[in-house]
Image (cartoon, rainbow, N blue to C red; front, side):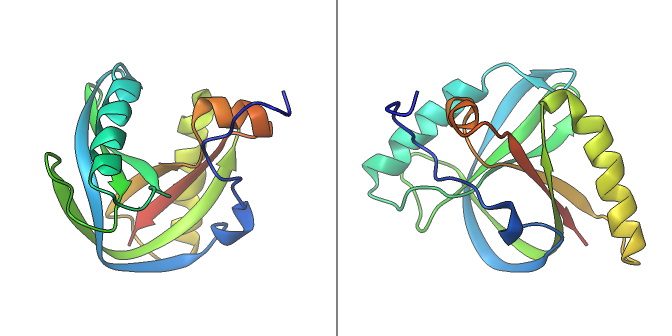
Length: 155
């Protein structure tokens, strides 16, 4: 297992645990993923297509891949980039966020959201929107033995 190729950098949770960050005009490729009851159906395919566009454009390798849940039936994915990507839809995200790191299987997401909500309220803030930053692909999460997710709460 040690010789397996790793495509994702090892994640350091200390950099994201209970932080306040501000993004000013942060550029992302944005795409829509179809879901059934929040379970994504075509996430991998969308990532493959967008990764190819990003690579073809000669952009930096993405460091943040996150979702913004829209409905039970779909969510948007956001992939950070350093320039416009031909053939891809982009968006700008600006705002201040409180962050918290969670580790474990995705089935714990409901509990993580409740924990994040309590954390933000404990800071005297109100959540405008939540984003979910998936720190590694499933293959790398297995290799590293940790499946970290950062919840970013826009305040």
